[in-house]
Image 1 (cartoon, rainbow, N blue to C red):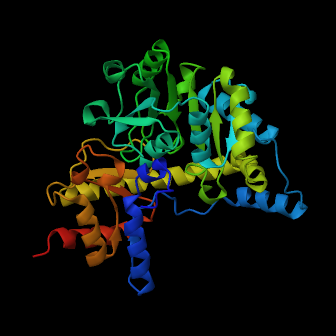
Image 2 (spheres, rainbow, N blue to C red):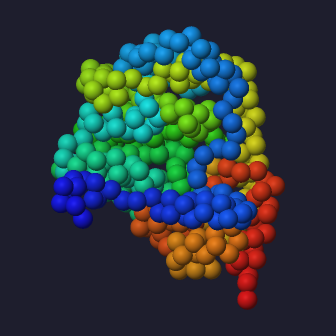
Image 3 (cartoon, rainbow, N blue to C red):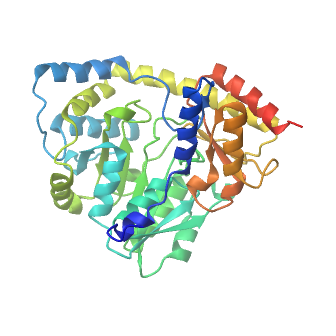
Length: 388
């Protein structure tokens, strides 16, 4: 190891699925048919109205810096979205447009987290969140969760594990990899508990919109003293445009703007103008049609995996993932995923990407491909687990 490499860089954990993806690309280059169920990226293109809005802005030639906090009209659109969808009033001054949800996390943690302070998170969880915390020399303290709490942290867990070094709690709903929602009452108790303890509550809501059986609740319904992270990537289908947003408590507005000015200057201008079209009624109608298609895919994949013998204690409420227990077939889900890719050309994500809580017993399946392709994938998976 180069001694000049920062300690924090050494502590950043890799994305194990990237090893699978690299191999999948190699196999595809050799002519093998690969069914991708490993990467959390919708297969739908960006809605046409959004693309057209971005192109129009590019053609003006006025692709210059916007205010660091984002286009005022986009911030107002986001505020209106919260009024209409959640009946929540948010001052647009509290809304910051960011380079994806990743940029939102960097701002939220940058204005709150000190070295050695810890954040409580569920295990399993999205691995980049822990790495964001390490980037600021903080500590991610993951707590094992299971089906009893819908794989979400509870107020009781937060109280039990809170220490003098705890800065706050991060909850993702719908979660990645489990796709489960936190119930409104459970979220309310968690928010109030963190506020009472004097900590920061971070609510990862990037999969809001992609919810199928119940209603997603924003943490803003229970307190203004929360940090809410969201994105145009998932529900709005704008992954490569790199636009997200962060909502901060009023006391953090100035500090957040100062940090944004220094580390981003601004989010890509044409992407922000494109995002303005995301809230048009005809675009939202198209997105709802896509949401319904994701629900059909979830139902198909859920039934198919159960029929093959996988255990799924809770049917996912949202996002586009199923986190399935594969212990009937293997004690090493990472090796299982590697072998499945080599033998059958089906790419899935091993549980070790999401923590240590029974990670070797789980695989994440992303239903970001068509049902026709998933039918073939399930046939291949059936053959793989029943070989010999």
